[in-house]
Amino acid sequence: MNQNKIMFFCVGTGGHVLPVKNIIDELLNNGISKNQIEIVTDNRGSKFLQEVDVKCYTTDVYRSDIGKFGYLTNLTKIFKTISNINRNMDFKNTKIIFTTGSYIAPIAAYLSWRKKIKLFVQEQNIYTGLGNKIASYFKSTVFASYPDTKNVNQKNVEFVGPVIDKNIKKSIKDINENIVIGVQGGSQGSNEINNYIYKYLENHKLIKVKILHIVGPSNINKSKNFNNYEQLEYVDNMNDFYQQIDIQISRAGGGILEALYLNIPLILIPYKLGTTSSHQQMNAKFLVDNEYAIICNNYIDVEKELLLIDNENTDWLDKYKVNNTIESGNISIIKKIIQEIKNGL
Image (cartoon, helix red, strand yellow):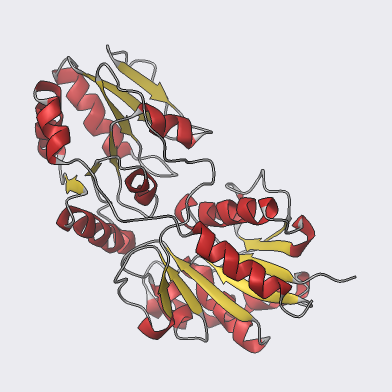
């Protein structure tokens, strides 16, 4: 018997692809067969999906570096992608098209309209990117990670909270002898953040602080040998990482809500280039306005905060102690997907 399916459209960085990986893990744990799940991605996105055991089609997807104008002047490339997807994917029995944004979201939205398939959109930032903004004006449900998400068709928005890795659990943490600061720069790493940390360690000795530093793929630097400092290329189990740390230094992409979900105070260094910068600046502003985080815009800011933590760590933690209202959106999203897949069976 043919089974109803869900088809995910995700491309680019971990911020757009890992939510799909996490949703698929939840669906499989809730009795959905791997034969009912399919993915459309590109070469960038496929790197994050190598361990996902479902049908995955990788294709070229045009990405504009100049916003709307780039898409309008490259419609031929966009329709070629649509043609490739139509030729390689079987939409029969597909009940849901699900996109996590970026440059494939308008294609997912178009196909949902053309084939009369329900469209689910997941937005991980407080300011919706161009792809999801376009998709939100199709008949759809937009699952928002932040309350009061902006730059989106509000009538289709449903605030549910962020998609969280199912392995990340709220629990009572051990009290660390020293304050442990976790540092990460997103799925691709961050040379800027790495260099800030190196510069600080070259000029200051850690006294009451330990730093766990995720430097990113192929960025291990064995010459950076400091007391109370440990480099990690990547972390397979982020729950273990979060359980060890008291504070996080990171970018301000959608992934920061994992730390917030666990009540970990944040020092944010938002990305400064391209459209990603506006999303991250607005994410950071929301968290600062709600006293969940502080922003550092340069090395001097980072140095100031690290010195404060290392010399007055209790005062710093009390000042920025998180008491957040953000909860995981997993349950709401999974429930709606399963209801739709089972509809008509």
